[in-house]
Length: 418
Image (cartoon, rainbow, N blue to C red; front, side):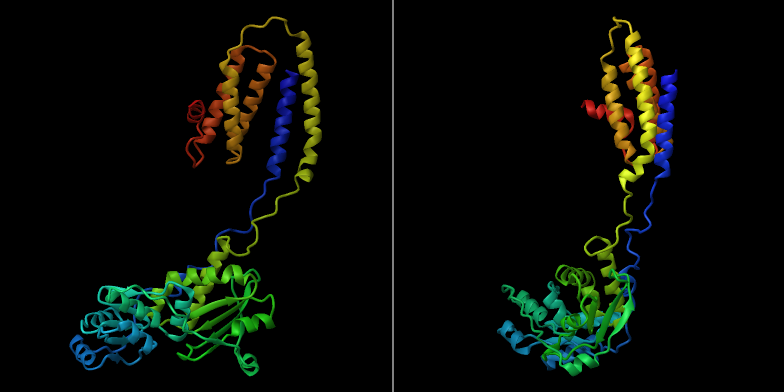
């Protein structure tokens, strides 16, 4: 009796101590930023006036290029003529942010080989979209859609798609430009420091070199996240740029590029959507983020329980030694299935201990310990079976509360046997 009391006290002390050491995460892995799509909703449209289909058709037949008021798209005419060959290419260019009815009128102009709404390029049943950072940068920083038009014309002519050309040229900003550029520090969850330096510039003139402020500011302010926006193009410079900038840009424009091409959002909305997308990437593990918590030192945590374990082990040792001295020489034949069943239930308990701290699991561990002691002490099979039945019932009770299948004892043991 004393042996079982000492074992129960040892297990109770271990459970109470372990329960007092529970730790919970105080930093969530969930991104704190709102969904990026909330800043650039795919609904509504502007009120730009678009003529009737008949009037648009008349205009397109009269001129190879028709630009409606407010149109922003630009292209390299020489490259388009070279790609067109003998095809009579007629281009209808409409402003961005049209409502559904206006976009449909533009699409219904059969006389137009290429229709452009904002910087969204289409023609017939085809649509040409950017698929690289170079394409998106030219499209959203300078409204350059040359690559898209050339790709579409090649498709209409059933010719191989020509290689894209990066038409955007950079230049170093002058000292006066760098000193006079408006920059501000904004709070954001997108970067580890909780803020970033932001420079917002209008859409840049087509065909002219663009001052590249990002690298220059990164050199002037090392260690500071730099976000530069040209029109609807947003790019990152600063810490971990080589690992992160392309991931951020590709993920944002692959998701929102088509929407930004046909709509006209305020630059602040585009910037907010980009920063929210960056925050999602950061908290998904691609960028630096804090760990949920630092595990406690296992040595420091285990020290208080060592005396209890020592006393319990000494008492158990003397009890088992005394039992061995007094045990009869002959013992009845043991049911060979009991050790296997004990091993299976013990393995199940170990796996479940990583998933739950249900009190039923604790009771099952006590019963399994008692069953093992009964086997070691050569107690009757009935005593061992009773403890195993208790352990199995408690494990089954705890498994029913888990959200994972396959942990009920019957299923688990059957799978091990299979």
